[in-house]
Every structure is written in structure tokens, then in C-alpha cells.
Image 1: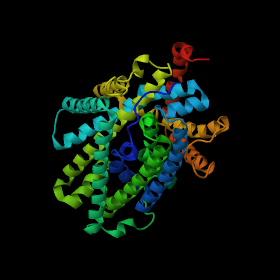
Image 2: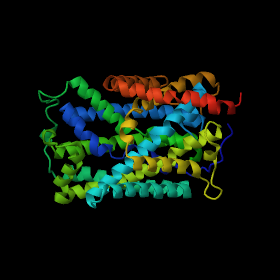
Image 3: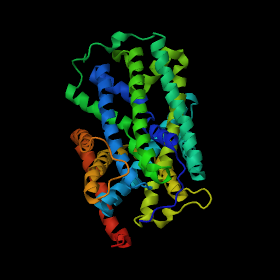
Image 4: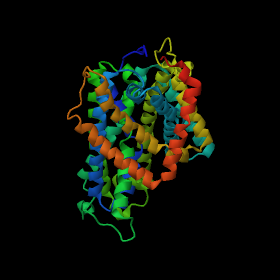
Length: 440
């Protein structure tokens, strides 16, 4: 494939903000409550955050090496193509296009509108219009230019990290909580799920709170000095997110004993009420809204680069491979992403469907990391950036990914098999429609 002609406009800090924005959406406000209740231990919760941080960091180092070798748009699609061929890469893009990326975008937009509804009550139809309106505006910003879209994300990311840091400082500094909430190490009620099951659920929940670190590679074709910037941005972002998750979870637990947590959805609001009084729920709703807007903007920027790369490889509609003559962005691919997400918001039936593809999504990320071994054997020249502690680094990631896949399949085998089945439908599509376009 010829190198695309997207403009390299993103430096270290916009790239770092893109990763952080993709990782921190609503998970940090929802996940800690359920994890702490099932684990019966705030300290175990913090340990699980550290385990997932190790997984994210090891995976980021692998993606950093791949991105330095192939600094072009498409991310995992490109790496799978180079390691395993165009069919495997197509299946990854097929999954991303038909469900995962539009589904996640629609989920975030719908969640954002529900928090708006907490502040300004409205009808279900109005909530959908708010969600679609946000998608249209944010897609338009990303079409207008990658730089303006990136700096919007930078501003929202600084706000989100800053607010969470202030909450942590206020929570501990004002002394409104109780350090005994962290003791004993494990204190679980008799009717709780077995500890192994709780640990499994905690690991899966933490993984999805960390999910999104791999998305920066999709926009590698627009990053300046990508062989240096991409690895540094990934490592820096994972470090910042880890500190944010641990400090925020710790202050939530300090303020609210596990035994008094009422629900996942209201946990953050409970902590907000301790800090800010009755207005705390509104404060946290506003924080979540801005946090999710940043995540949606990042998804609408990064995910369409996969469809763009597929179109340039002639395994997707040529229509999606166009670059705007004035703004220099893959505007049609962005419009596809925004349009599909808006359609899913209107249908309102995507939540359960999205669950079917979680197993496959983890599988593709793991397969991409396996591609590091394949590409190192195929390519004689070393990459511009080489991960430290090879092969230990990818092995650590793959061990943790294998554990996650085992837990996901054991918990919902039907969903996992259905996801695999739907993705497999892409095989005849590839051979009947697009295979003839591939150069021998």
C-alpha cells in the first residue's frame, strides 16, 4: 500500500491527550463501586488496578514498536495485515466497522445524554436528539481539521484530569472520610460471590476501564516524528491514567465505606455529596458529561482511520478513502462513523449486541501483540523503536490477555461464540467482494 498523504500535525501532548481521553470516559465513575462491593476490599481493588496497568503498559510498548515500524493510518488493521495477511486484517476492520466502533460511540453518546437528563430532565426522544446532536457537532469538528479536534480533546483532558486530581486532594485533605474503610484487607459478606469469581469480574471490569490505549496507533499517519512520539505518548498516558484511577478510587473508598455503596451508577454522586453537599450529584454529572464528550471526540477522530486505510487497500468502499481537499482529513470515513453511531442511537438496541463482540475485540488485540513476534522474524531491519525486555514484555501481556479471554468465555460462552460467528461472516464477504482487488 502506498503511504497515505494525511498531514502530520499531532505532537506529543495532543497524542497523549488522545490516549487519555479514550481511556477515561465513564468507567472510573462506575467500575470501582461494583468491583469494591464484590471484592469486599478497597485494597484488592487497588491491586487489580495495578495489574491492569501492567497489562496496558506492556501492550502499549508492543504497539509502540509496531507503530514505529509502520507509522501510517490504520493501527491494528495495518499490523495484522503485515503479520498475518489481508484477510485477518479485513476481519478486524469488519468487526470494527459493523459493531465495535459505532457501537461504543453510540453507547458513550447515549450515556452522555442520560447525564444531561440528570441536570435537565427531558423526554426519551429529546435525549436521543441530544446524543445525535453531539455526534454531529463532534464529527464536524474532526472533519474541519485534526488539529482543532485534537486541541479540543487536549482541553477536555486537562479539565478531566485536573478535576479528578482536585477531588482526590479535597477528599483526603478535608478529612471527610475514614481510613478504616480500607481495612481489613478482605471482608466479604457470606452471601457474596466466591472470591475467584469476584477477582475475575474485577479484572474484566478494570480491563474495560483501561481499554482504548491501542487507539492512538490508528492515527499514526498524522503524528509528527511518530517513531519517537507514539511510544512516549502511550507510556505517558498509561502512567497518568493509572495514577488517576488509583487516586480517584482510593478517595471514593475513603469517603464512602463499601458497605454503604448503594449502586454503581450513584457511587460517584454519593462521594460528590460528601464533598459538595446536595449539589454534588449535579457537579459529578457535569464532570461526566465533559469527560464523555472528550472520549467521543477522540473516537470520531481515531476509529475512522481504520476504514480509511481499508479503502486505500481496496478492501472497503473507495468512497471512504477520500481526503478533504481543504481540511486534509478523511472526511467521508468520519461521516460513516458518525452516521452509523447516530443510527444506532435512534434504534437504541445496540447495547446487548455490543456485548457479543467484547471477546473478539480482546482476541484481536492479543493477536496484534502476537504479530510482534511474526514481524520480528519477517523483517530483518530493527524497528526505529524497540520495546524493552523483549520477549518478556509481550509474553506478560499475552498471559494476562489469555486469562481475560478465559474469564470472558467462561462467563458468557454464548456471547463469545456469537461474536466469533458474526465476525466469521466477513470471510465470504472478503473473498466474494474484495479479494479480487488485492494485488497478488
